[in-house]
Image 1: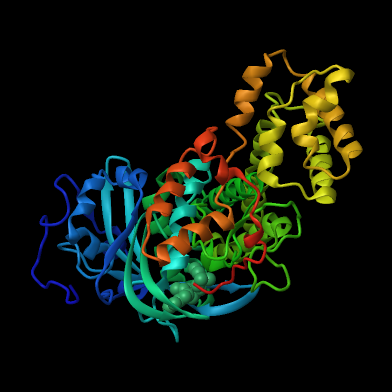
Image 2: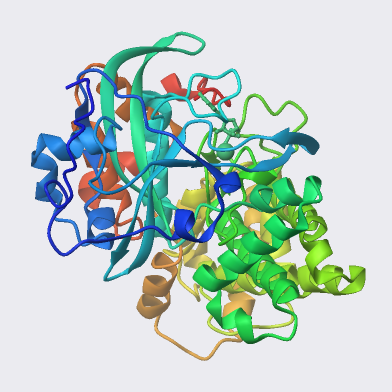
Length: 507
Ligand code: AMP
Ligand code: MG
């Protein structure tokens, strides 16, 4: 079905009980977006659906058996009574002001009031918009599978993130380094407003629009801030807090975003715009997951610093509303410092099986990262394996008991020394049975993350028309903390064939 149906079909395609809202266009003037229809794709077909995301929308996954729904999420057919929009924003890319960007390949299809809250439904890859510049407005199957799987995997890990509802595909060729095929990933978030949305108006000194946007975000996303004496400073502080928490989560699971440009930073502190992301395997704090990032601006180690830098770009943008440099700076520091540090140490304590805080924790955590930096063990397996070790062990049994972890380290003596430190720290905790602590550690240290080679396996099968591997991976990653013996292969180190995998900005 190539042509969009022109008849109004309100209620015809979307299940009963769904309430469509239209806050974005109702509250924001036309300068904030372009009304633009997606360009239909030939022969759209369903590639994958997330049941969890369906539940967020009160949508029965069985609805996807209807081809109408596939057409809607491929951009071939509109939801009745709605107009698709592309939003304008600007941003700093790789530390440099890039000017106007905007949704070059994303369309806000609809806003839905569900029992779980308010959701913007956005398709990515639906064709060009006035903000596409010289690009084609499309997304390829490869990058859509990566975004879909990672969004859902991150949510299951407890990391703040936008969600993915489904992927639709089409045989339409799309030129990247090689010719690939088109796909559309449908994303959900309460809001897709970015730091760059604010930078856009501030850079043009259009203070009225800047205020309109800030008021809109406060009213719809942060209504509790309306009563604050300084609502705009309070907004900045809250965004800084949430951004700090998000980065702490990233660091604690070894996630690297790859393109932390200010146009990819969510005003809700959600992980946004999955492109050349990666999960740390052999630990190296300098690891760069994005092949296009030759300077390592967005290396693992740099992420907290970059987020802080990005918050200063947002602070600069909000400064005309706040009107005071010190208050602007204070909002960032008061938000980001506790947001990042408190979350990071809380998450790390959980990963180490510590129920209480202790002054020495900083040192214990720091020395573990140093040990990992020197030995490059697999990030996910290191923490998961630590949870198997006993809190107390006799010297006679120690080597055997610690073997599962020691085997990941070349410098066994250094590993032993750190484990001694860890056990001494555990001894300061209120007594609790090993099994209880181990269960708590397993609930903090995932067994499964979306390793690049796992995504690659799903992509290769999908290119051959077999989408079942996407479903298998999704089923596994929606329970990342469960042992799942039947899925042990997804917990394994990268196979030899994956050693040369590179991920770039190309998507
Ligand atoms: P990114 O850093 O990948 O999130 O994208 C930066 C900017 O480029 C955003 O404004 C995107 O909408 C735009 N963009 C990226 N790829 C495309 C594409 N294939 N077609 C149109 N715009 C694109
Ligand atoms: Mg982006």
